[in-house]
Length: 336
Image 1 (cartoon, rainbow, N blue to C red):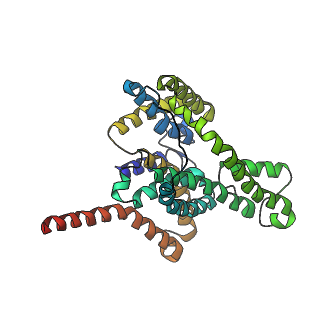
Image 2 (cartoon, helix red, strand yellow; image 1 turned 180 degrees about the vertical axis):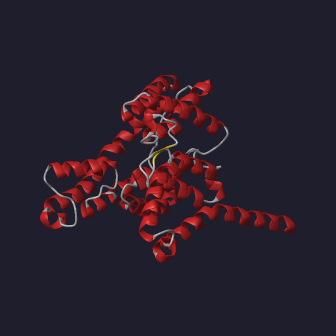
Image 3 (cartoon, rainbow, N blue to C red; image 1 turned 180 degrees about the horizontal axis):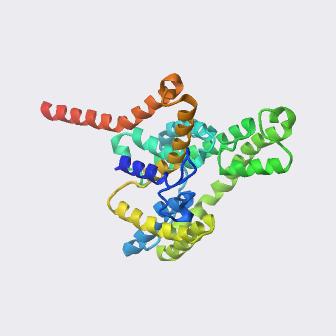
């Protein structure tokens, strides 16, 4: 099911202008689809709208959280469980953030997917149901990617995310040219950006720790009050993002389809990952085909071949683990 949803996301990424030829594809003559589906629209249709519909379809879940929210401090056992997750996702998120155009969104979804795949079978079932590893992985990858996205900005002048693209515009407006000479020509700006990351994290830590009990009280708000706000902000976000009414129709259509898929237990996160990576994959594949006259780049560049083999291994890993588990279970049964 996850593979099927990933392929569906890759297919949806092909809507709009292609990487090789600037001609519209699969737009059905609709001008608003020439730039493809909007990421914000698709993300809200996959996650925000189905949740609101589920709350309407299941009225018994409309009550707010019961009981007092207390003891939100992390325990020693929880810290021990998430320590390896934080270490792995800090490195993975940072390297994904360094990739130009990847951003924190891809890092968050990939971090969650990787930790879910490498977790033991008993812990995999807890993902999506309150797993502390499932919470730590995307948050760690997100924070690491935000830091990593500054590397291509400060060293090459290439924004690594939407946020750094805004910063790039601000620096250019101030007659500062990010690039290899920024550290030499404007060292005060270079080191100020780095120090601001440390100071910002400390300020967030000081603010968030005392405010966690109050933020958590949002869970006690009755769901029937939250549903109108969820729907309102979802629809307004989709409209403001592209400033046309077609996005509202796409949001509702995708939201209904996502609700049906959720009823059938299809995971929605792989679809969004496939959609995000589809455009990047097509652009870079087309560029490689032009530079190396075909697919010769696969064996002419050892790093590319190595990364493809690692990706293939990760795709096959769940099925291999499943077969090993079945053989072990069959062996235990024969022993009995």
